[in-house]
Image (cartoon, rainbow over all chains, first blue to last red; front, side):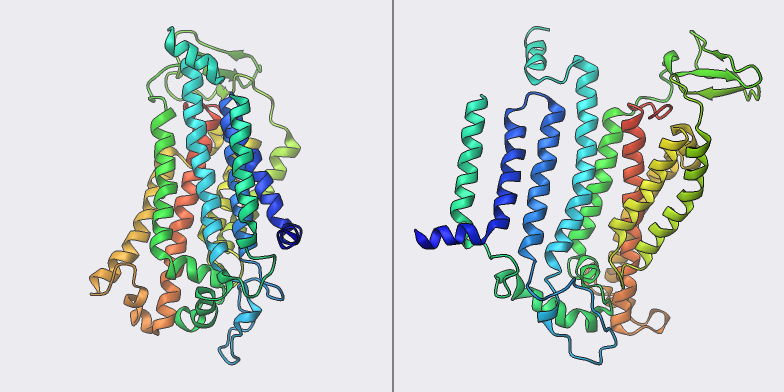
Length: 129
Length: 277
């Protein structure tokens, strides 16, 4: 138990990601407005991105761009952080923007048809047209 | 409903917090993520690809297939956006067609027609909530936009040596066009970069990526094996890989620029591409 509590306090950065993820998830499930759901989705994505970048962190290391690229010296892997999380997240950010665009397009169509963005009102209109 | 949602969210959060002891602590040198593949990338990728920016090397070379499909995702997103909200060009919405007489400043709207017949120099098309263009905003943006575009091209081209690459440079380039549309109006953007160009550009980027992959196959190697570029222009194997990464990044940049401009044009004009923000 003591161990567990020290774990919880020493890995404080994960608290932020988990709380952000919970906020996003709650907005996606509980909010009735479609735009608010999309905002929740974006918050959720931000939490995942922060999580990945945190996994890539390494004490005493710098960004994965070689300082001296003449191949003369030996490249010490302790000096550079893992490039993989950065690669995954930089594509994820652009793809999330693109998918957000599609989602907003769909929301626009929904608004054109039903004149509202509230989920319960849309369901009502579909049931009793 | 709200209580169920809250319960589910708290349950998920609690499970994650319980499993937190399996996560590496901040900056842990011994974390699994920093030990296995990362070591290979850092030590070997410069001699294999001649690319000091390891992120670009991993993105364009080791994970080339993944990046290709990410590009396809961006292209498909733009296509889906187009198919979902683009109105047919011949649909006439008279509320969107206002003309201003340039000499007198009178704004007219025809109820029954949209386009004025022929070229008419005495009338100019204006937005329905036409705010006169602010001189300061317009001229500042006119000065700043070329530099933003130059910076975008630099970020694409210099992605091997500094933070950057196709995705980032493409987004910066698209941002310059968004700035053009916001500071002037959407028609200025469409006049500079019409829909045909953006659609062709987004497809051409994906095709460039596939083309580099197919070139590898044509030379008898695997798909996306940049070793095929060895010997082109007398290049060594490693600089062939470097050239391959550059070509692929240019393709990514083209697709991202075009896709984001398409999405902005469609969303800001609700699918009419005549009048936006």
